[in-house]
Image 1: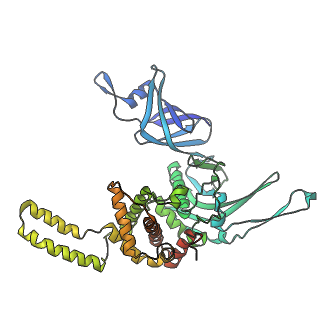
Image 2 (image 1 turned 180 degrees about the vertical axis):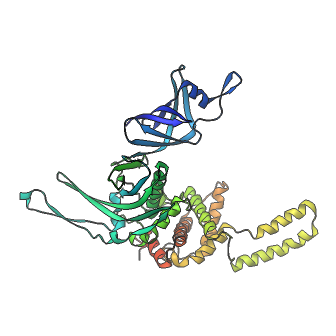
Image 3 (image 1 turned 180 degrees about the horizontal axis):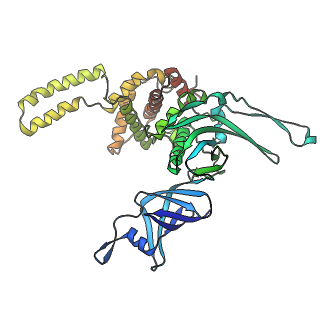
Length: 458
C-alpha cells in the first residue's frame, strides 16, 4: 500500500509519499534549505541539526479520512536536491499508527472496541456451535456462550474522562462462514483530540500486553465509534491485519490473568499506564522472551523492580535485615577510627565510605520485597524455586544484573538465574497489582493463572 498526502512542519504543508517503510517528504526549495542548512551572512552551510528532530510527523492522506503518525530515528535520513524545484527528504520509518475517523473532535460518548480471536479464554467467552443437519432451510446453527463475564465491569476516571471497560462480543455471517468475535469494550465520555486518542490507544495496547504477558495478543481490529455511530479504525504496523498467526490459546506454556480478577481494578491499571506511572519495557514481546531468560531481559526486569520499589517505598527501605545491620555496624566500627585520625582528602574519602554503608543495594531491596510480598507469590516460588531462600534469590538477581550492567564478559545465565528472575518477574507483577488495590489472595490467584504451566500446576 502506498499513501500520499500532506504533512505539516514548521507551519508549512509538505507533500509526502509513504510505502509502509520509507517516508518521502518533498518540501519547497526554501523549506528544504531551512531544514537541512543554516545561513551565516550570505553563505549557506550544511546544518548539523537533523531535520524533524523529534522523530515524529503526522500526515493526512489525500481525499481520505486517514491520518498517519510516523515514528522514526531523526538521525537516519537522506536528502536529495536536484534543482530548486525538486527536493526530497527520505526517512525510514520505525513505526507508524494509522487511524480512520469519520467524526470530528472532541468526540462525545465514544466506544473503543478491541477485537481479537485470542481473547476467548481470557474473557471466558468460549462459544459452542451446534450446526443443524437439516439443510432444507439453508445452513443453520445455534451458538451458545456463557456471557457471565460481560457483567464484570470496571469503572473509573482517567485524565478527567469517565471510562468503563468490560468483555463483549459480536457475531457475523458471511455466506457459509460464521465468525464469533470476543472483544473488550471501552466506553469513554469524551475523546478530546487526536493526541488524546493515540495516548489512550497506546495505554490500552499496553494494558493488553500486561494482562497477556505470556501470550501474543494482536487486535484483529480496533474500532472507534461515537454516539452517532460514525466509525473509525486504528492500527499500527506492529501487526499486519489478518496475517498474524494465531497462537494456541490452550498452550501449556502461556496464559493470562483472568478477567474475573483483572476487572476489579482494570481502569486503575490503564490509568497507571496512561500516566506513565508503570515501567512497561520489561514486558516480553516475543515467544522467546516469555520462555527464556536473556541478559537484556535481566536488565529490564531489574529496572522494572527499581522503578516499582521507588514508587512503593519513596523513602527507601523501611527496615534492614538483621544480617545487614550487623555487617553495617562491623564495617563502620572499622572505618570510624581511620576517619577520626585522617585529614584533608583522606577524611573526605572515609566520610564517603561511611555514608555509602547505608545505601540500599538492589539485593537488599529485592530481599525485603520478597519477604513483604511472600504470600502474593508463594505458589509460584513453591513450584519453581522451593530450594532457595529469599536472600539467595535476591543475591542471585543483584549479582548477575551488576555483572551485565558493568559489562563483565563471563555471564553464566544458568538454571538458577532463570529461576531467580522468574520469581523477580512475578514479584514485579505482585507489587504493581498491590499498588492499584488488589488483595493478597487475588494477586496470588492472578500469578497462579499467569504462570499455569504443565508440570508446575497444582
